[in-house]
Length: 158
Image (cartoon, rainbow, N blue to C red):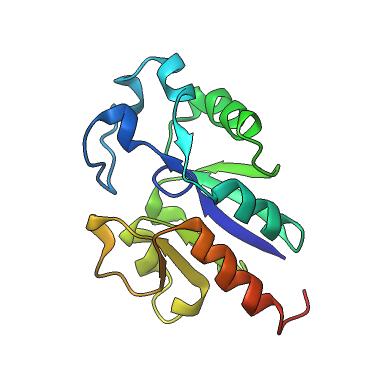
């Protein structure tokens, strides 16, 4: 059993390095506007590491990102440095992030949420201004998501 977790704007807070509100649809050159060292200064959202460590006790984690593959080492190293659980990383645009066999999907992109129309119980949306009208479980803080998952898990056996 596995869960899909997006990196940018879901577990990684890009806003402080960009000094602006970050859209769901990142421009193609977004990652090249910043030095590679600056990308390492991106901080995880509070509670994201703890929540994913909890989830990893019950299922495998597969990370997704729209980052270009030529900076894959930055993505892998960033996850390691910040103590995220290990997991496969898939470099896919939002339109290709449909995983029908996944136990759940944690993302911020409205296009990903649309892929799960009719399966809204599977999708957990990290709230941002650009996705406020998306259907699915919404969470503003990772701590609240952890609490919800913990309580839901008390009634299920994985």
